[in-house]
Image 1 (cartoon, rainbow, N blue to C red):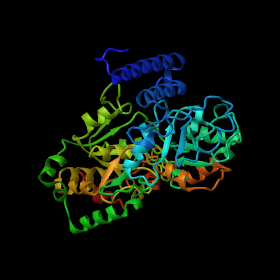
Image 2 (tube, rainbow, N blue to C red):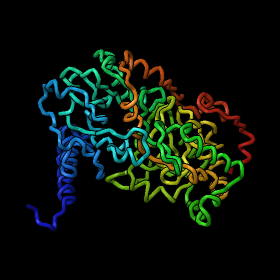
Image 3 (tube, rainbow, N blue to C red):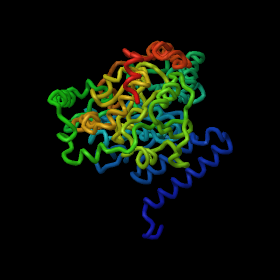
Length: 478
């Protein structure tokens, strides 16, 4: 027995630290360049240990709900051959979701939010009776198995026959033109694995299930929409918000007297990235923008470092960016339809107005007057706009009025997946996931050196839609 002074949380913390040390040593020895990616089997063991220690079960359940612990008295299948009895679909009204891989070395909940039934119920998910596990002993009984696209290979899928009721879900959040996206699509095609995929789960709105980097919550709503990243799912909140804009409401109407301290920021705009050469040529836009306004650049693409241990992480957002900048350059590395990443949701969460650059129709994902689309402005125009708004607290504050009606989150959601498992009784599979990814992605390559020609006549017009007048703007920019 452990002494009373040592609580369970101390033991768990010790095991986590020990595991992370092993992961670091393992990764540094086997592949120094990829030491941040933990081996799946170690992550699975870590998560399973914490979960079993906490609940006495392999399932994620953070509550005292009887339903959450419905399987505690049942035997867990461990035989890889799976008996016929164990491979039968459960009929207790619950659905089991098996994470086949870790999520790039961390638990899936780090990107997709709650992975337990209690959490889904509290969120207002219309169907919340889903169990989540990393235990591959449930391969024969799980209603759905989630595979990361990079981990979906012939040598890393279940070897036993697939039960007819089971859905295999292919999860990919990368742009199809990125090396990772091209590689996973090629794997499906070359190894003829397309037919193994029942559902796709990507950032694209045409996916069977949405895998978003973030979403909105309607304040006061009791039921969570299945695709909360789409603004159309928040019609009532958006209706009230647009009415407030039409009335001329300001941030003072939302926040009261504290609005002045909220909008007071010492600096104008920041950018943080370690990916410096991109298909979207965002680096060219930022270089041109920097000629007209000071852009503080954090990370590998700049000269400012937040924290050496976590240079692009939450500490940087909380201690360096939030409260110090009016705007953040939320610029994607690819110009693909619907491709919107955490670069958008992080500034929203930290009370900064995002300046977006991407291939998505942002009006589908963001409240009106909550962001600025850089693809509608030449960098010289944008510099003038940001400067003017930074100097006008009332005008800048109106970009935050939406906060009185909606709340931003920088995580995805498992709600739609759980709900579909409960409601979709049809069974089908895909035939050309790789081809669909390229067709639906509709990615555009921005021209290189697009700002090197004469002002107003450059190649930048192929990706920027503006009525830019060089003489007019020259007279306005200081």
